[in-house]
Image (cartoon, rainbow, N blue to C red; front, top):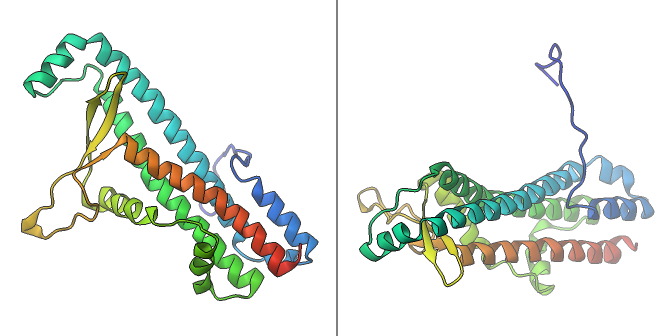
Length: 238
């Protein structure tokens, strides 16, 4: 690596976490006698990027859930104080505020990672269309729609990702249910003085909405793989 020649580096072996389908793609391409074309394209590197993004997303989801469990333990322990703050509509001073910042960081990062992973998957499919199938990339979205792969959820994810990356940061509140507290991202109102820069519609982003986005993404991730293998069989005959 340029600039690191004189440094003692410990390199970490890359392990595929969520993309065993990459091995299957390589096998299919080899079977079709197209390995040279595949290996000379950026598809291998982009495939690894998809794997890393999805692995990071799953890690962030797990860390968010673990942090929320710890936060709930504290809120239950301080039930009397918490209930009084809710009843009187006063702010609650969380005793371990680092946990709030962790949950905020993990959940915001999960949203940005999810959109990035989606972008890499679309990039991968577009390059596969052009390099391996010799087809126009603008046919991809039409084919995805024909195969009932839903993308309506992407607009909301894109908007909130854009907002938290460029327009504002969110803050957390906790919604009390019969069994636990779920977190809610409080979103600012548009600043009319500077124009309506806020893209995501709504004033909150709650746990259920985030879970629905995650569900939609993971479903897309799985269906995109099935779609790709269907196209490989159709176009490459393997």
